[in-house]
Length: 118
Ligand code: 5GP
Image (cartoon, rainbow, N blue to C red; front, top):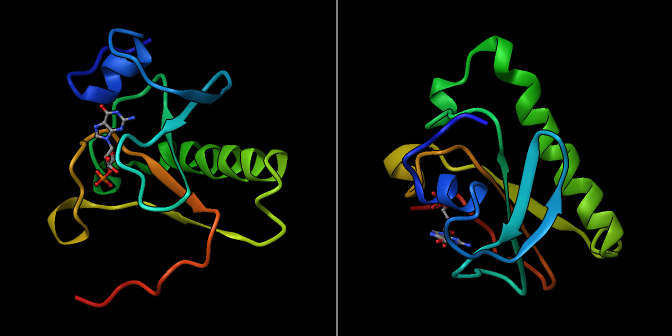
């Protein structure tokens, strides 16, 4: 496992608590500490430190697919697929990225507002 300085690295290494709801070889999923929807889970790569989507190389592209596949599997397992859900990845300031270890937000559990306007 690669070391990382972010709070998510500490969660991966179990140095700080988190409510982990999903784990496989490459991906960890845990509840967001400040949920923006009734269900708000973050999916992160466990073995690679990639600060932002802008740092992603073509060779690392499959990893983002794994985050999406993990989120979709979790959503289906939880029955969230019936009413639907949203996945979001924020990149840098204008998107409001605050943790520089790429992550995918899964938001669900209620109708979600529109997004993208300043
Ligand atoms: P970003 O804004 O970078 O796209 O998303 C970072 C997310 O990480 C935020 O939604 C924030 O609430 C969440 N977060 C920050 N620190 C912690 C933490 O220590 N534990 C958990 N579970 N989530 C965190």
